Image 1: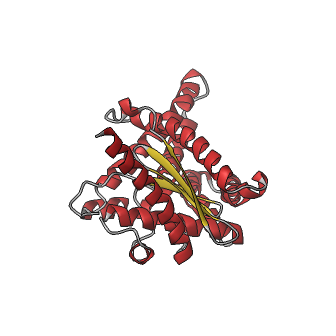
Image 2 (image 1 turned 180 degrees about the horizontal axis):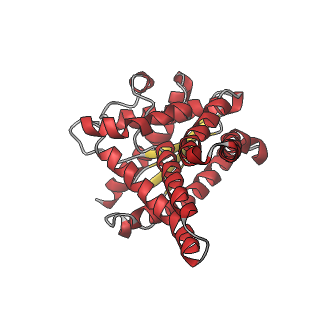
Image 3 (image 1 turned 90 degrees about the vertical axis):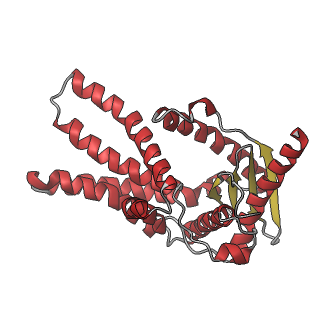
Length: 286
């Protein structure tokens, strides 16, 4: 893959014993089976709502709806390759969410006991920081730790492709496990936006204005967070971008771990399946 070529954007997420990757026109899943073999599955997939991709703020909401469809398709492919208890499979991914919910509860309790003058700053700081602390703590659990390693492998594989390098475990190992388009970054901006919106809405007197503001807050937060992620990705190599967006990118330290060669092989298998499938589609269309 030439470094001068325009490289398509790829994305993905970590799975139990594997990785999902998505490209412009297909989705691929690779898992490591108990016998050590890597199994892959590939399907054509186009993110819905492409009509909105050039409309700021609207594209974020449309993209969020598309991610739900992407999750449904990836879950189906994973179930095909990774049979077993669905509850057991979900546990590693539920643990961070449970930890974040406990962190939110702790934030509320701290706010109740704090002096009124520092409640808002306390809620703002704790509301953003504690969920990531929960992610980091839950990442020490064996099942979640494995998930975080596959998350790191996913990022390293995508960074390898976007750097124009050959997809090999050796090349991927040298890449960063930080990627500016990660969902963790979206979560950071969403949490920050939620804290700002909450402080504003809570100051409004009860009534229709407060209700309307509360209803509008969610879509505004999601669309703004999407634009922040998008802008950060565009400025990933710019010094100003690194200064301003760097702290948000570093939150991925709590949701990724350094993968080993076996996990990198799985992530590469998923991404290579997507790349090969899309090349074949392009050749057939030519």
